[in-house]
Each structure stands twice: as C-alpha cells, then as structure tokens.
Image 1 (cartoon, helix red, strand yellow):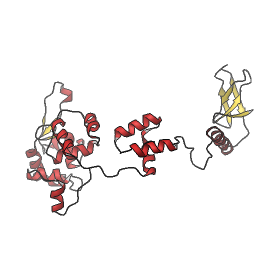
Image 2 (image 1 turned 30 degrees about the vertical axis):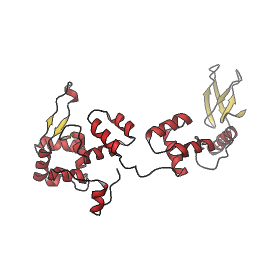
Image 3 (image 1 turned 120 degrees about the vertical axis):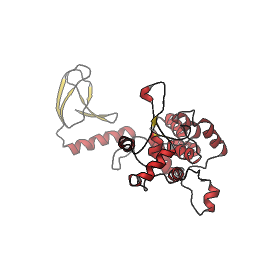
Image 4 (image 1 turned 90 degrees about the horizontal axis):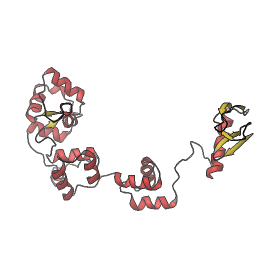
Length: 266
C-alpha cells in the first residue's frame, strides 16, 4: 500500500511493517530495519508518480505547487523585515543573515534583489578606508582586507593600483601584471621563455613559494619592442598608461569631473 508521509512516497515492508521510501514507480528497495528486499510496482507512469510526489510535498509543507521545482527556502514576513533593515550588500552581513535563517548565502542575495534593497553601486572610498589600505596592504592577507574593508578583492586591487600602492615594493608580481595587461600567467610565461620579457624571482624562505617580480622599466621595454603581443581591449587603462609614462595618474572624482570623464565603478 502507498502512503504519503513527510513529503515522501512510501510503502510498507511485508516482514516488519516499516515504511520505506520509494523514488520510482517500479523497482526494488531495501528495508532499513530488517534488510529484506522489497520488489514493488505502483502501476503508475513516471509522470503520474511525479505528480504523487508533488502532492506529498504539498501536504507536508502546506504550500500549493504552482509549476516548476518546489520552493525549498521559504521566507517569512519577519525574515523579509530583517533583510530590509540590515542588508547592505556586504559579505559579512550576508553571512550573518544566512547563519541566522539557516539558508544558503545565494538565497539571501536573491531575496534582497526581490525586495529592492540591493545596492548596485559600491559606496565611495572614505579617507579612513584609504589610510587603512595604505598602512595594511603590504601586511594583511586578502581575506583580512576584504573583511575589514567590506569590498571585493577586485575593488581593493584597483584602488591600490590607482593609489600607487603595491604589495611588492615598486613593481609587479605575476598576478598584478596579468591583471594590468589582461592576460593569464601562461601568456606571461611564454613571453619569459622567448626572452621578450625580463623578470626575476623574489627570494622567500620556501623556494616553492618564490614569486615573480617585474620591474616597470622591463615591462615598458617589452611593450615597446613587442606591441602586438598586448591586446589594448583587455588592458586596465589607467595602470597601462602609468606603465608607459612612468607617472601616477590622478583618478580622484574631482580630477575626472574636470576632464569630463565618468568614474569607473570598481
């Protein structure tokens, strides 16, 4: 006999009368209590069996099925009110709400978009944030920087680059060079193997963790001698200009407004 219990379709074990869940209209299942094999046939098509499973979920959750997959994460009015009052698009806030509700983080972001509280444009950098970045960019790890500033790694990298702050004194690591020229490390490795680009290894306590260091002069020389290797559509414009000119560009809102330019959102 078929039973709809706790949102599942179940049958009775003939030996111990334990109810066992089934997931197909015809097949064999093992009783978890007495380990006996149960062969069954509900005499339904796969579509009819699916309809029965949906009915079981409706009876269990009390939410009628309206087509598509059933809703697994249901927000209450109290949860919505909590999201509206706290949500600020920061990762720390999203993690807090997800732990409080017991929901995945993506459901919090999705619900925030539905409620219209998502902030699409990041807030401007404050003087305190810039000072913190200047003092700690060389000291803290990326997770720590993201946590303290409440911004993505990309936003932090771009701001540090525009402020002339680098983690490797003066110059570029492999990753920062890839970001500036819009390529991956395989491409840079090819340039190095051909002798077109010059770089050196930075010494650390562990040889396996040594990383590449590129002097701006060597990068400028490479670009001048092999201009067709660089795709101008993929470079980070301000950094690319700084490499070629050797000068720091003022990208403050006032300077860009005076030149009739709109600020790029990072």
